[in-house]
Amino acid sequence: MVGLDVIAYVGGWAALTVALAVFIGKFFAQTISNNLKIKWSKEQEEKLEQLRAEITREHSIFTTILNSYSSSHQFSQSNRIEAVQTLWDNILMLRNLSSFPALFFDNLFEGEYNEVYNNKTMMSGLDALSVDDTFTEISKIGDTVEKYRPFIGEQLWSLFRVYLILTLRVVRSLAEGRDNKNIISWDKDKYLQLILNNAFNDEDRKTISSKPQNMNPLRPTIELMEQKMLFEMFKITSGELAAESDFSNAKKLQELIKQVDISHNVTK
Image 1 (cartoon, rainbow, N blue to C red):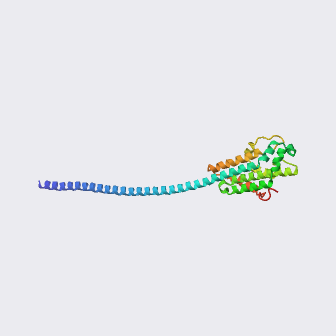
Image 2: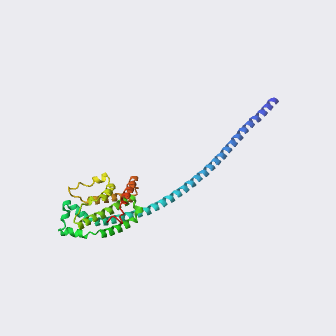
Image 3: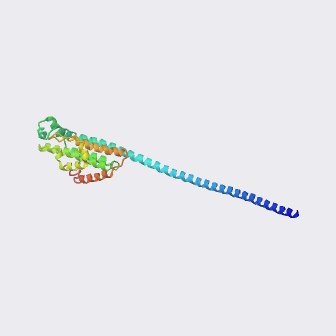
């Protein structure tokens, strides 16, 4: 009995020890697990806070950049709109300068040009033409628009210069013909045809209706010039950038324009 009691006694302690070991093991495991959870949660929360702070900082920077860009864009767009408005006002002035040449060439056949000297109405218009006065007005118009050149782009600027040259040269051609009693058609000007052929593409030319035989109207060419400039104005006010082909064409036109110094040679 004593032996059994000892065994039971020893066995009971062993079982108790095992039970305590299991309990203590679970307790420490749970404690460690809870501590790990707390540590992980704290680390994750710190990371989340860092991420929130980073997002807030990036958002602040983005907002600042966006506001700055928006303010700059609005300022530039305002300048572009003002430039386009100024340009169109001066285009209308050019149209007025070419109004009589357009009336003359749009209503007479070539054979009738030199029959107008006894026509008081036509001669009144012809006598009012002055190359010097026209050149002075065109120079003022060109100087006014050139101030806005940074905001209208090279393609539109080049087309505008072609329009300046067109206006001046048709006035000069008609005035010289009047003085020499030998008026010839405006489209016989080889230099003018050269730059117009480079200003207009094949699609542009298709929009000009076929002219009557022995008649060379001027107004369709003027209207086409204005339409092309209006298209460029729309691209500017809508924010659309000019295509690379447009820039290349502008450079080509500028090279042709340089062949005649408008401020010195165009009236000679």
